[in-house]
Structure formats: structure tokens, C-alpha cells
Length: 120
Image (tube, rainbow, N blue to C red; front, side, top):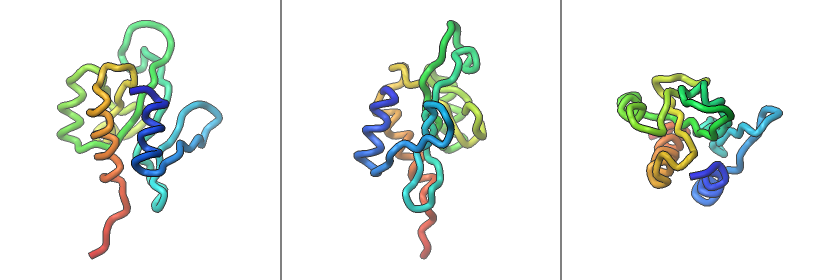
């Protein structure tokens, strides 16, 4: 899944447009109602992810259950969250190393975990 495909997916599924709060290409995905982040799409230096080579990698940070995140970080394409709480957030490379459906499922989980709490 690419950055562009992530943006297309969240626009269709959640009506989300990327928000660019900084003067760069890093984009926040926010809920329309509570403005909470459910994703952060950014370029991160390969070395900062423990990868070899020069340049940067496109990634998405998503909120994740700590136990699930611990398991996923053992797999290729997943990293401790870059610039976020490493227990509750997960960085996923957007370079084809993680299947599109798995990324979509994790975006959906993040969206649910950051949604406004329903009052009973």
C-alpha cells in the first residue's frame, strides 16, 4: 500500500482528508468529530527505522493494542512507533512489505480505538 492508496482508502471509508499541520509532507489522519489522530503518514529516515540504505521510507503510525503491537513488531514491515508512544502505537512501512488488507485492518482498528466514546 502506498501513501496515496492510504489517503484514498480513508477518504472512501471515513471521509477523511489528510491534514498537514507542519510545513512538510507529513499528514495526520483525524476523526471528523473529536479531531483525535488515528493515523500519521510520514517519511522517516531509513536509519531511524533500523534499515540499511540512504533516503527515507513512507510509513504510517496507527494506534494498536499493546499485545498485538508487540507481536506485529516481530514481523517484517513493522517497527516501534516513530515519535509516538511505542506501547500503544505502531509504525508500518508503506513499501509493499505488509499486505494491503493487513494495513487496512490496522487503520480500521486505530480508527475504532480513537473514536469518541459512546455514552450509554
